[in-house]
Image (cartoon, rainbow, N blue to C red; front, side, top):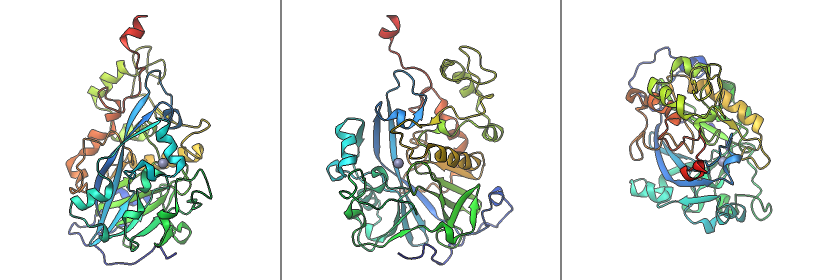
Length: 386
Ligand SMILES: [Zn+2]
């Protein structure tokens, strides 16, 4: 194990520092930045055996959801780091516990090129990946570490359970994930940084990229915070939550980024008032503006995909401050709403703020045409006529 804090040359940007809202989060000023590039590894179609383990309520007939899997390439000068890898291409290479989810039909994978193939096709040699960071040790984030040379380090959260299959038959990790490489657990105790109540470490030691402790979904769960300009950030939320309706709406977001009128209007008659309510809602006419809490809850049923649903809810509450701030773009690992609205590798996401993409993304989950719309029962015409 080696120290997570390594001091390396800063990437100097030419933009002057100004007092900005990030400083209210306790984030130190810095001109050092990383470039963030998003890779769509594939889509995981989740069926109704899984959905109640992700969020509630689950409405009748809403029985599948396409979850994209993103991996992120971070470039810090010449240094290249991956934050998550998505899933490996060969289901047969998963541990039995993970494989079972596919044979039971609860997941359907759609992977044409894994993350390594996409990196190489885009001109990035896997040999140049200095470190892989797992947001957590679920199979749809850990990829296939055997495709990386032993010189590639692995960084994981402090509570990550490293008991591998078959010692732990329920484990998603296996010997080949760790064999022959440096594996480092992030040590939050060595850092005095706390952003919006979340413990943080300065990964490169220059303020360009932080890892934050976001417990609740799975032991050792990490969130990344990438400074892409001196004053704007991309928050890589991993599986802190799985659907934008678990984050939104909230009062601070409503004040900073009001729901656009056309979405408010369509939502008024598409969101089921049998399942969702707010103070100014009337039967058959949902009012988004007076809704003060997220529409979807973190699942707390037995078998939930959140190992500690209460902690997960608190982590999302803490992340919500970033979501409501104009300097932060929150992206989760399975963000359905970001599928078609942001560029992919080899293009960078760094210009998100100047491009104004946040405004278009925040309320997309309430648009009736969006793939993430789960707010009315999906009853076929033949059924409803009966
Ligand atoms: Zn997960």
